[in-house]
Length: 99
Image 1: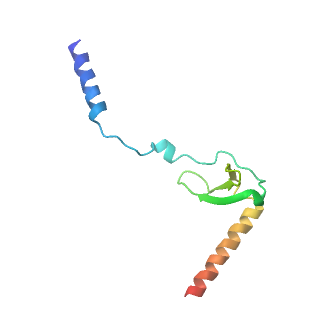
Image 2: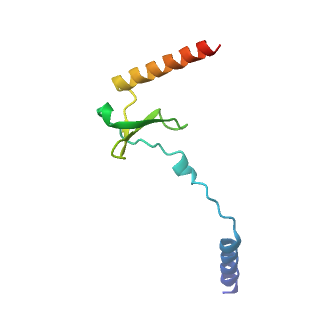
Image 3: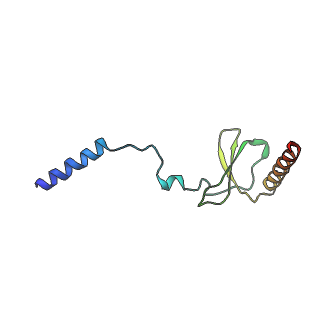
């Protein structure tokens, strides 16, 4: 009976005086944002594109829509592939002009 009281006191002490971490648990940090993707999103409804790459997940594209919803877009979508290709070409041109 006395052992239970000592263990309970120790547990309460650790709970009260233990350090508090504001970091997310590893399972949440490494979780993929996109569990499913869509192939068709009207481009005129997209306000912002966010590109996410985490170690355990494939390349993910999250579109923030004008109605404040967020959807995951399939990275293999043809228009998105063209968008990325054009963006890379612009970056290469800008880099060449600055040199």
